[in-house]
Length: 377
Image 1 (spheres, rainbow, N blue to C red):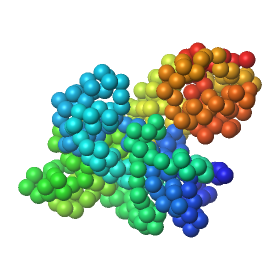
Image 2 (image 1 turned 135 degrees about the vertical axis):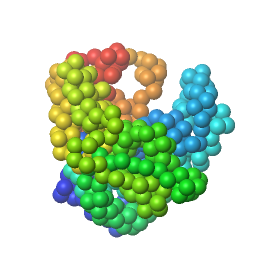
Image 3 (image 1 turned 135 degrees about the horizontal axis):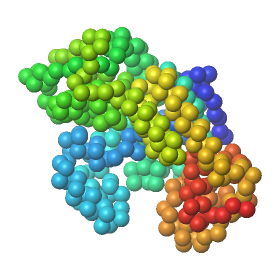
Image 4 (image 1 turned 180 degrees about the horizontal axis):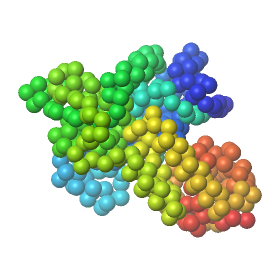
């Protein structure tokens, strides 16, 4: 069974309440202007997660969290290239981090991201029932889902609290143009701070602006301002709103720069790169309609370009050997799509039955086409 719809008509809190009361098991995929989150559900609880944090550079997270040095990370990268393995496996096999340390570093950020999903913004969702074997999770799985154990009732209460808190934070910081000063004498011990707070303090110490922080941490503005607000309440930092016309020294409007850069990339047909920049801009300013509109336009433009290369009426057929296909190391969703080709479905039909988004389905087909795995009849 699959259910899909708009978060405007069925908010995330209503969806999760239904999951809890009916003890559902499956996956809930949320898409907001190209940024995707996946919650794995089992008997009404959240047991796994995949989102922007797991697609970010893990090396960046563990270094800025203070778990490793740059030299440690270089050692892990060398091992990764030599052994052709994931970075997680390299960190484990080199003895640099334990599995629990890796999961702890990412889990805190993942939970923050899940809570931010409750902010009242437009988006689409798809709930899909899943076989029991699909719920066996491990950090090194193809999808790199993160095992979690979240109580839905707690999630709902925390999500509601975050919604109210975000409104108060926006009243406190009507713009992102603020000056932050650190009081070293009032800083709590680093080991008592969360991963995101430690990373924010490190970036502030380097003289970065709020916009720079969002880009550096790959974090949305609500999360950054919330962490700053908590540090301010403890007296560790002092925050001042800048006067009208006053700007952070040498700091242009980062969001406007990202939009300008993405426009140049779109003109050159580099849609993946343009969309990536706009996704960063949306994570920085999820409440800015102009940014979300720019991302929607880029996604629509890329879809039109993909359909030119993959007309909906054409039928993809597999022409490569299974051994060659195996060397591609396809993700489970991509493998599912490839398996559907045996039914001789056209591109339009494949988009309809795919568990991936329209854009990801078309990109996967283009990847298979360019790799010589398929041809179009």
